[in-house]
Structures are given as C-alpha cells and as structure tokens.
Image (cartoon, rainbow, N blue to C red):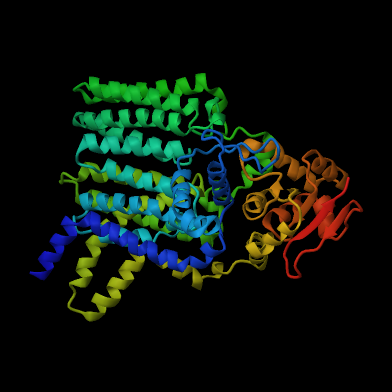
Length: 591
C-alpha cells in the first residue's frame, strides 16, 4: 500500500519533485561554493568577459552594442556573443542591488545564475526517461546527471558563461525527440535549437544532428510529418526572432561564427524546405528519401555557393593566429589528444550511455517505444563520436548519455535489490551504480600511474590560479588607471577586478591585437616597446609560470619575455612595488 502510494506520488508530481530536487541541489552547491562567490572567483576568461558585458549593459551601453571598450581602448574588442544570457544575470543584479549594494549583488547573481538552466536540464532528462524507461525512473536520471563531471561543471556557481543554457536546450531537444506527441515534440526541438543558436554556435552540430534525425524519422514513417513541420516552423521562426532580438550590430554582417545573416539564412531555408517536405509527404518511402536527399544537397550547395568564406574555420582568423593560438586551444582538440587521466572521466559515461541505449533499443524492438529509442540511440552515438572531433563536446555527450545509462540501471538494479543475499543487495547494487553511472572512473584513475599530474603541470596551474586571484590583482588599483600590457588570458580577469584596461583577450574576432601581444612577448625588446606604445600601454604586467608565459619562452628563446624571465630588464622598464608575496611582476613603461 505504501509503495503503491509513493509510486503514484512520484508519477503524478514529478515536475514539482524535480524542481524540489533542483532547489535542494542548488542550495548545496551555493553552500559548497560560497567562498568562491565571496571572492568573485569566476573560473574562466569567458565568465569574466560575460560579467563585463553585463556591467556595460547596466551602465548604459547599447543593447546591440557588444563591443568591450575596456580592451584595446579606445577601439574596443568585438565580442561575438548575444545579449540573451546576460538577461538573468543583469536581472538578479538589479534585484539584489538595492538591498546589498553592487559588489555583493554581482556575487550573488554570478553564484545563482548558472544554476537556473540546471532546472531545465533536470526537467528535460526527467521527461525523457519517464517516456522511454518508466514513469518512476526520473529520480535516477537526476542522480546520474549529478554524476556527470564535465556537464555539472557548466552549472556550478560562478560559471556564468553560456554553456549551461545551451546544455539545458540540449536536454529539451532530446525530450522533444522522444516525445510521443509529434507536433509538440517537433516544436520543442525547433525552438530549443533556435535558442541555442541565438546564444552561440557551439551546439550547431548537435542542432544539425537533431534536425537530421527528425528528417530520418519522417523518411521512415510518413506519420512523422507533423513533427517535422512544427520543427521547421520552430527552427526558422525562432532563429528569426533570436536574430532580431539579440544579434549585435557586429553580427549583422556575413560572419560565420554566430547567428549572423549567414546562419539565419540557412535556418530559414532549411525550415522552409522541411516544412514543404512535410506538407507534400508522399506515400512512397523511397520518394521521401529522395526528397530529403535533394533538400540536404540544396542546403549544402547553396551554403557553399553563397557563403564560400564559411567553408573553412568559422572564426575566419589569419593562418598565423590559427597556428599559434586556435590550434592550441585544449577544448578544441580531440579527446584522444588530452591527458588520459582527463579523457577517461569524460568518455566513460558516453560509452555506457551508448551501450545502455543499444540494450534498450533491442529490448524495445517489438514495442511502440522502438522508434523513440532508436532516435535517442542515434543522438547519443552522434554525441559520443563528436568527442573524436573536439573535447568540448564532452558536457553534451555526458548529458545525452543519461537516458541510456538509466535504462541500463533500471534493468540491473531490481535484480540486485531483489536478491536474497545481503551482500548482493548492498555491495552489488553499490558496485553496479558506480559502474552504470560512470563514477567508478574517477576513483579508478586514483590508483593508476596516470593519476598524478607532473610537477610542471601543477606549477603552471598554481600560477594561473594565484595570478588571477583577488589577492594578486586588487593591489594594482593603488596605481592610477592605465592600459596594462599583459598576457591574453589574463586580460579579462584584469578588467573585472581592477580599474585598469587591457590590450587583448582570447576572442578571435580581434586577431590583430592577440598577434600584437604574441609578437611583443616573443620578439625583441624594441619590438615590444613599439607595440606597447601603439596600444597606449603604460604598464607591463606578467605572471611567471602562467601557461601562456611558458609558450612564449618555448617558442622564442632569447625573445623579450624570455629575457624578462632571466631578469634581463631593459632600462625603459621601471619595476613597481607589489605586496611581498604577490605572484605578479609589474613595470612602468617609459617612452
């Protein structure tokens, strides 16, 4: 009786209970990360730039003007993002500011904002698992999501960049793909893809994969036409609204790295063609396949002919910058080029998710859930294979692995829990959970020779953390506001924590400034001085052993930075005092 009643409550109130789980999870993470929030410890350069973008908006910068004027002043830095993700952060700052003041309002907003999309991710996965596995399996989906290390990092307090919101849209996408109500499911996938593309193009392959799967479902079953029609309308209409409402002035030209007229045209044409196919929808499957192939060829050929500049790297940077910078971005490298201790924890759950989806698909071969499981299997496999292209697919691949892992757990756990042997019920279930959730990988690497990073790796990481800390950067404000010449990766953090401006940050549309910094540090002292003067920089700031500094030393033995590292300081640099234990070194540049 009690069990039946609890099952009914889990089924009937799953949305409320999922949101309750989100609230409790969020409270725990806020408690756990409170110290980082107090010090505004934004973990990534993009998180710091996101806060600067929000500050500029609240200080009166135009809605469609996303240029960051505190970098490379007075021209500023062209940031290719949209305002969409700024809204919840700015809204919370405005809400908290009258009660706590601006500094603490920012800390609260940066702590809470990344947790908001986590609620959507939980709801999307819970809905998917309810449909595919069991109406009572959704709590396991939430637990498994919390066991996704790469995914959960994107929802942590202070991680205010846009990746969490895009993962939330990915969760809605898989929920829409598995929705038994075709028109509703198609619309959800289309709108989720449009929102994701409005935020940024990082999930473009996932969006294209979802669209391809919907088209394949229609090819296989003509009854899927309503799903494809609403998907087409949601994708094209949502993209148009996203562009109109959030695209910056800089994104109104034919760039390839954001929702510009290039990708807006592609989405509108793709939506129109898919809608037309859904309306015509011939009875013959071969005819539907032929029409789908022709539509795909029209889109691809049209893209190549009309936008040939976008056939290469979407960043459209110079060959030199691609070689010296973009080619070395870790997250853009395939997973097999990463240290094994990192790769194992990323790929384990996607592999388990694919296995689970295969098993579930086989078991559903005579069930009405078969098509939906095939859909999820295709999407999960596609995401896992994306890791062979770029490691940045890891968070999405882990999220999409959750339904397959839950299906596997739902199959295994009842047998173990129903055993008459206590050891099997307890130890067996725990072991099975560790394996199916993928968490065993995190424990396993601690006992392998690959577990311990090298001393050099530890030293570089420590330098990067200490040099970007409040303790290190706040004392710079004792000097009058100036333009500081420093490392590319230190620029965003510098302008967040001090009143100084920076020359460059890691944003590809500003390749000339990034190359200037690279040339200045790797060439002669005279070259550095000329470049610094051209940018109006009057201070030089370096962080010994920071990752970027090791690159300059390795590439240019005897170059300007290498000379500084060996204490060969030119006469036109005057060292300025910093606190005794500061990891930074500061000079005034005289001309």
